[in-house]
Image 1 (cartoon, rainbow, N blue to C red):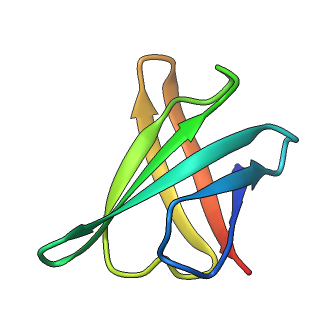
Image 2 (tube, rainbow, N blue to C red):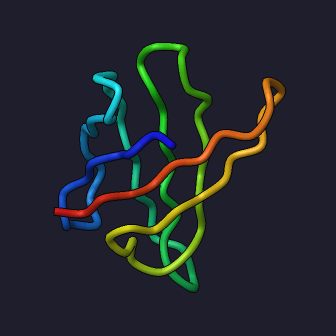
Length: 77
């Protein structure tokens, strides 16, 4: 499982991954919460988005890709 480290604000920001790679999280306001769009600079991980309320520390998400499933954990702090 790859951990994604994010700051505790609902603003677009650079993010770090537990395997040393970097990425970017774009945050957009939606009618019932937020859209969190994760993009990664290296192609070791697939980009994905998540719609929901504020991200909670420890939140886990399974991303289904052409290469198979990949699990991420969001760490806020």
